[in-house]
Length: 208
Image 1: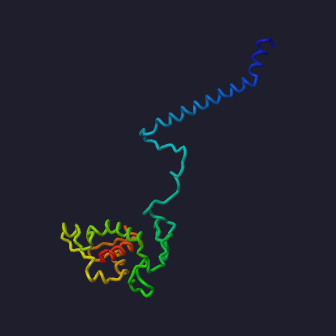
Image 2: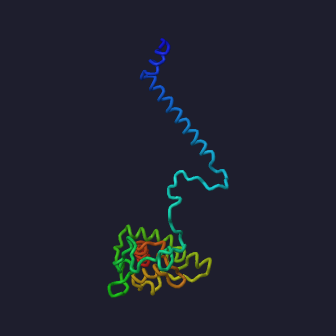
Image 3: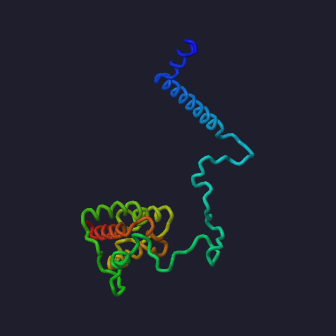
């Protein structure tokens, strides 16, 4: 073996040369990977008659049933099943009939609200009243709101004797279920907000 061959072998057998070769191989691999990613990205948005290639399936091809589709697993052949009778949604167990229905154990309307008319409750009631009630009943509660002045629709005055003597529980039922031309406000107003409005209306009727 001549001297030049020994020098070349010593050069490639050194740790420095091995590390350099490893780094060079890693750089080439990363470069190829980068080119592949760029090529894949450039293809986005291009139309093709071929089905897409799913590199990562994720949940695109999961076995499932679509809403309103048939299902042979159930007897009624419906994918969307009704809840079991008596099912109560989480947080919807309403055993307090006084709070949620405005009635006592005997099924009679409560004379007064189950919630204390604190300053915070009255302030909340005033705000909700201004949004949902004042357009019809007006801020003063006399029933001369915009619905009456512009549409000529008769609106009950909250100062009528019938309303003044109406139990709070019955007022709660009217807000919850609606009455006559007044629709239900159970959806936009929470239970507490309905009682807050009643507390504010009672304050309004007293002229405070």
